[in-house]
Amino acid sequence: MLILGVLASGRGSNFQSILDGIESGFLNAKIAVLITDNPDAYALERAKKHNIEALVLKPKDFPDKNAYYSHIAGELKKRNVELVILAGFMRVVGKELIDRYRNKIMNIHPALLPSFPGLHGQKQAADYGVKISGCTVHFVDEGMDTGPIIIQAAVPAYHDDTEDTLGERILKQEHRIFPYAIKLYSEGKISVEGRKVIIKGASKDAVLINPPYLFQ
Ligand code: GRF
Image (spheres, rainbow, N blue to C red):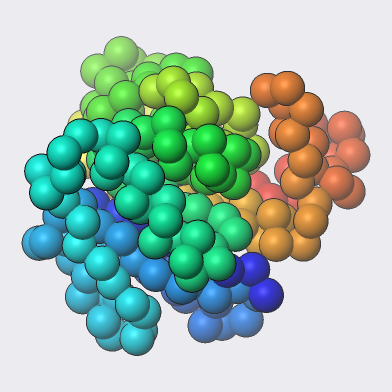
C-alpha cells in the first residue's frame, strides 16, 4: 500500500477527492499525514473527520526556507511517506524537499501547462480568451509548475467564462485526474525519462484517441 503525505493550504477539495478514492477502494493507498501552512485551512477539518494526523507548520516559525522544507521532509520521512501530494499547497516548494523526494512529489495545476503557470491559472486562461483549458498533474521540480507532466484533462472555455465558472469546470476534472495519477503511480505504471513521463500500458493510439485516464 502506497504511503502518501499531503500538503495543502486551503479548502482541500483535491485532498478530499484522494480521501474518497481511498475510501471507495479505487486507490490502494494510505494518507500518513496532512501538513498545512495555514491554521485556518478547511483541509484540517477534512483530516479530522477522516482520522488523518495533521500538522500545522508555519514558515514564519522557522529561521528560513531551507529549515522549513527540511523539517517538512523530516516529518514525511519519519512516517515513511513514499509519495508527496501537493493539493493546493500555495507555495513554491524548497529544494530540501525536492531533493529528498525527486520525482516523488505531485502537484495539481488548474491550467494546461506550460500555459498559465503560477497563481490563478483559471483567471489567466479566462482573461486570455483561450477556447480550451484544463488541468495538469505534474511532478514538482525547482521551477514554477515546470516539472514533468503526468496527466492532463481538457475542458472547453467560453467567451463569457469568469475565473469562477471556468474554475468550477476545471475543478471537476482535477478531482478525477489527481486520484488517477496516484493510482497509476501506486501500480508502478509511471516512469520518468528526462522531462517525459511514460505511462505503462497507455499505447500511443490510446493516448491520442481516447486517453483512458481522461474519459472513463
Ligand atoms: C486547485 O485549483 C488546484 O489546482 C490549485 O489550488 C486549488 C486547490 O483547491 N493548485 P483545493 O484546496 O484542492 O480545493
